[in-house]
Amino acid sequence: MVIQLPRVLALDVGEKRVGVAVSDPLGLTAQPLLVLPRRPHGVFLEKMAELRETYQPELVVVGLPRRTDGRLGPEAQKALALAHELRSRLGLVVFTWEEWMTTVEAERLLKSDGLNSRQRREVIDKTAATLILEGYLQRHGSQVPAQS
Image 1: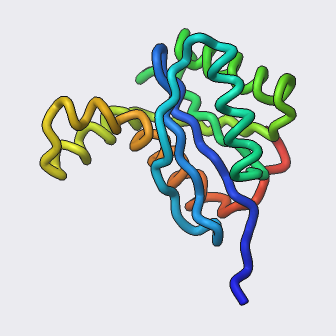
Image 2: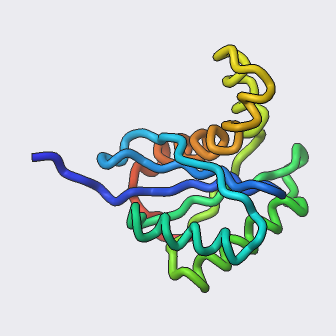
């Protein structure tokens, strides 16, 4: 008998796109899932509601980018606003995860895998979301943190 733990989704929030990753049924690994367009916003929320129904995540981890000096910039403010909206409008449990340069790291990994620039552009956002989820799972597993 395989024990299934609650699934966790992770989001890498960008200006135009949101990368999505999902944990495996055992809560051990992160897998890239898809990239959603941010606009129109209503369509984005509909797609997130569909993901909620399909995966029934116990938690959504939203990457919270920090600047190199540690401050929260406009990108982080947008991620926080989206996290709040996912909580209030979709009833999701959301936890923000401080991330540093995950898109840069994703770019490096994809280059080392031999992907050309067009191929990297297609998968970079969901790869960055996977890195965010890997960091979260290494620290917490599929446990929902007490404070989000």
